[in-house]
Amino acid sequence: MRTEKPVFAQVAEMIENDILSGIYNPDDLIISTTQISKLLSVNPTTSVKAVRGLTDKGLLYKKRGIGMAVTSEAKQIILNERKLELLDTIRQSVNIGISREEIIKLIMEDHYD
Image (cartoon, rainbow, N blue to C red):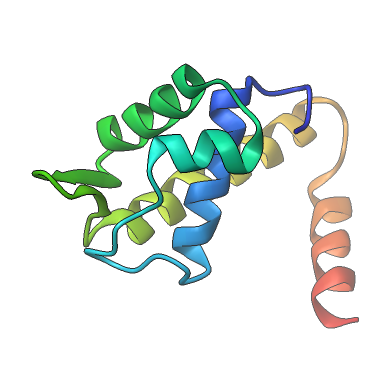
């Protein structure tokens, strides 16, 4: 686990990445909070907090008596959120003196290499 983000946020991000990559599709059950805790060696409370956060964001819903499942909107919600984060990062880059031209050049070099 990385140290710059709280552990629960890292766990949530891992689940989001699994949704984006297609490991979890709409209506698929995710692994239980107990399994998450064991797999990642984190406190069960941390797993619960991560899953609760994903539920609050509209990415997961409870299938009564079965577990937590992925919503049909989850992938789009994550993509929209990450696009906004990227745009914010680009705005911050301009604010610290990186020119728009430098940003465009960097994007073009990485995209077409």
